[in-house]
Amino acid sequence: MILPIGDDNSDRRILPVVNIAFIVVNIVVFVFLQGLGGNEEFTMAYAAVPAEIISGQDITTQNSAVQDPSTGETVRVLGLQLTPIPVYLTLLTSMFMHGGFMHIAGNMLYLWIFGDNIEDRLGHARYFLFYIVVGVLAALAHVFSTVAFGGNPYIPMVGASGAISGVLGGYLLLFPRKRVRVLMFNMLTEVPAIAAIGLWFVLQLLSGAGSIGSEGGGVAYAAHIGGFIAGLILVKMFAASRREPDVFVGRIR
Image (cartoon, rainbow, N blue to C red):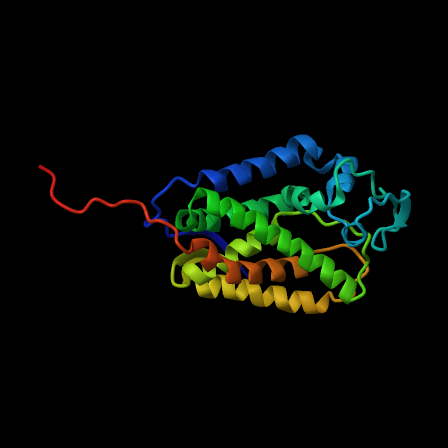
């Protein structure tokens, strides 16, 4: 297993204020609106639900009781809640919500490591748009795969993973040789981005293939794959005609 913990930022020229703002918003939503994951009503109201995106209609469902196969304990499962905004906007709101501490911690770690470099290359405004666009496309990839492969369209999706996958795709294309510090087999080392991110993408492909048609909840691998491909395709377009900061070359006297 490879866990990125940092990268080479020696060539970064601007403060990544947008990337920092994205991280702050994700944390604020999780802590104060989702109640550290305890406010299930909020989560079930603002999550992206494939059936709602396909139909364009808000859907509510009844609560249910499910028996945990490992413990035999019966647990209450909250149904889909009334969504007070147009359902298509949940493609955005779901990007800033998470399912638990480990979910948000992992996502924010990846965003902290890789997002600042993309913002540095694209600029603040272009990075903001890039992140939102690849995030929405990632969510739509999940919706499409759910329909195409017979998944349960009533399972809600939350998380920044799709947008961050787009950031990884952009990073791989723009900085394939940049050194990334990773924990690999309990050893701290450095590898080129093409190795760290490439292995991550292969794992998403393998895991996604294994989850095709799954009826239960879990990781939305199609969103990861779709976001990554969107980032690969779109990052150069967003970087095109980007004006580089003025750099003074000469002597000071």
